[in-house]
Amino acid sequence: MVRKFAFGLATAVALSGAAFAQAQFGTAPEAKAMLEKAVAAVKADKAKALATFQAGTDGFKDRDLYPFCFNAGDGLTLAGPASVLGKDVRTLKDPTGKAFGADLYSAAVDGKIVEVAYMFPRPGQTEPSAKISFVTKVGDLGCGVGYYK
Image (cartoon, rainbow, N blue to C red):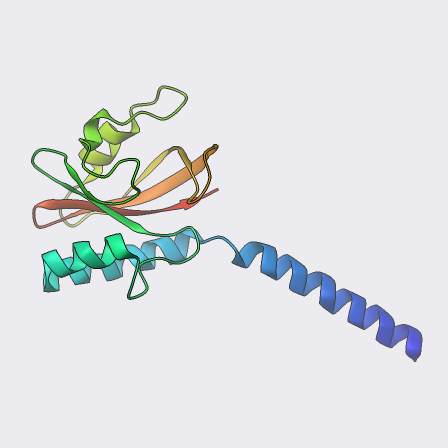
């Protein structure tokens, strides 16, 4: 009886540890859901939404998930990581030389959510990781939320 209990307890601890490891990073469905929430926020009040995205409040910062937006005209990044804020998204390249910013810009299409894969550091890190962003156009903005592989 004690042996079965100890085995059950060890199994539960191992499973909860695995769940914790997975829970520390955002998932594809969570990224897509955050993008849908971000689109609704932009439609309701663009200026407030951009400020909220940048502040990471109202559920717009969840582990390594966050929205980013750029002007669909000139490509100027209006919300996102400090390393890209204020830059023309079309000029961004990952460490492999892939022009992912141009891919993000062209993926911003009304009524569609397009996936763009590239390398980018997780928040708080400098080493790039594989990332996939869901991108769409809302009004005069291209917006996206990405998750890390």
